[in-house]
Image (cartoon, rainbow, N blue to C red):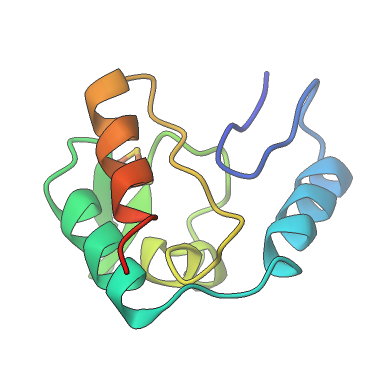
Amino acid sequence: MSCKGCGSVGKLTVARMAASFWRSLTKGTVTDAVFDARQRVCSVCPARVMIDRVAYCSMCRCPATPGFAIRFKNTLRGWVCPSRDDSIRRAFEEASKAG
Ligand code: SF4
């Protein structure tokens, strides 16, 4: 099992997930334009789930706690869309290039 979003490979353990998410955290943050573009892609994605009025990505294996909300992940330069749907993943990649 793996998490494409965090870049973790192999069996996901709490330690491995924490390490891979830490790597995403250390790559810096995106511009406001990239954040807005990513948010637009996620807002219409079928993998987006709402829990207690907070949006999470159901394709990712991260826990549904506020620290892993889409709104936060989309600020991270190292975060990539884990969708298996090519069109969604490409749209997210394009959004990540927004000026
Ligand atoms: S699969 Fe990609 S586009 Fe969909 S909610 Fe997750 S990060 Fe956003």
